[in-house]
Image (cartoon, rainbow, N blue to C red):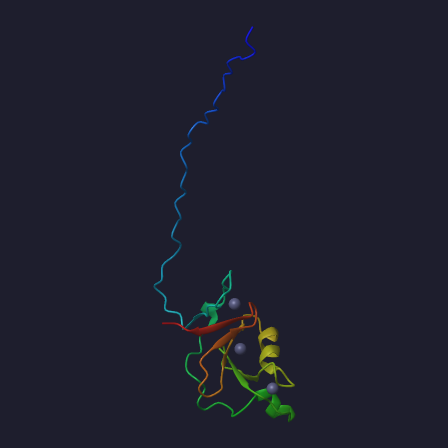
Length: 138
Ligand SMILES: [Zn+2]
Ligand SMILES: [Zn+2]
Ligand SMILES: [Zn+2]
């Protein structure tokens, strides 16, 4: 009696499902021009985002504003760099300054999360809520 026997290998057949492709809905339009956009972070796997871009109302530098941090001038301290609130135009000093008045302003005033650099030749802004850099849009 031969030891060999035929083996039936059942080949499992999986039913071919149809891959569902959900359609991505396009949200809103791009009709409103924003002055600032989130600056890309080179090499970052997840790009930062900011929900406060609509808060920016101050577009032009305050030419006739005070020549320094309003709060430092009032209490007599010195500042390193100046930041201008993009919502109300408040001039405050940067985080490298002893007073950190731009940061203090952003946290004291609800909805004042964006500040641009008021330093000559610098063209960037910062969101204190998201801690992301912004650049001029367009
Ligand atoms: Zn933000
Ligand atoms: Zn200050
Ligand atoms: Zn402000």
